[in-house]
Amino acid sequence: NNCRKYAGLIETTNLTHIMQDGKGMTSFTVDGTRFDVEGHYEFVRPVGYGAYGIVCAAKNTVTGKEVAIKKIAKALSNKTETKRTLREIKILSSFRHENILKIE
Image 1 (tube, rainbow, N blue to C red):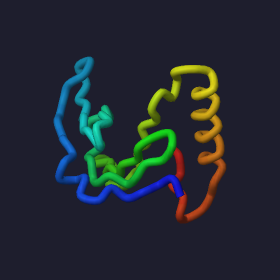
Image 2: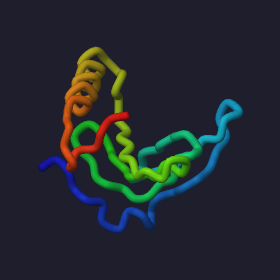
Image 3: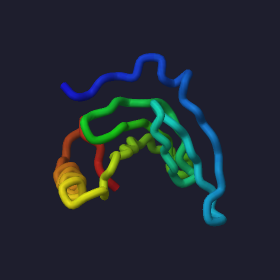
Image 4: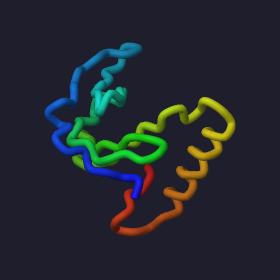
C-alpha cells in the first residue's frame, strides 16, 4: 500500500492566509508541500500520500461539504507526468462508489 496516515502532522502544519491577484486565497503547508486554494476552502486534516502526491481534507465553507485536495508534484513537468495525471483524473471521474470521492 503506497498510502500512509500522517501521525501528528496537524501540529506541524503551517496555515496562512494570503491574497493573490486581488482574490482571497488560502495557503497551507502539509509535510513541506504548499497548497494554494480558493479562500472558501478550510484545511481540515492531512489524509495521506502516494507515489505522485499528497492528499489533505478540506471543507468548502460555502457548501459545507468536505473535500479531498490532492497536490501532484511535477504534474506538468514532462509529457509522461502529464499523461499520468490526466489518466488518473479520467479514471477517478468514472468511479461511482460511496467510498470513492467524486471529482467535481
